[in-house]
Length: 110
Image: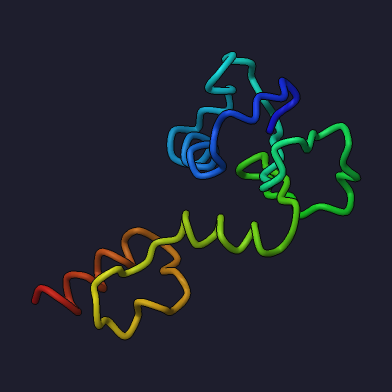
């Protein structure tokens, strides 16, 4: 949810737009949003929050309502091996796309 208060876009799409496309506009009204609130409460607004108490990701320009939501976002955006049976499947994400590519090449296709 941004200052324009459009709760119509899911948090997954919001994060993908902000991180992958570097698009910080609201998908509904196209207002440029420097900051958004990632929450599961559709009635929540940025103005109603104590922003100092929330987790903030500067690169995304996103406040997270709690640590659980932040973990889910990090998992969504992380470079992970999704091949069934891989010992790294449940591990933390690779730091870079290159590390994941190397893992896939040397660990699965070589």
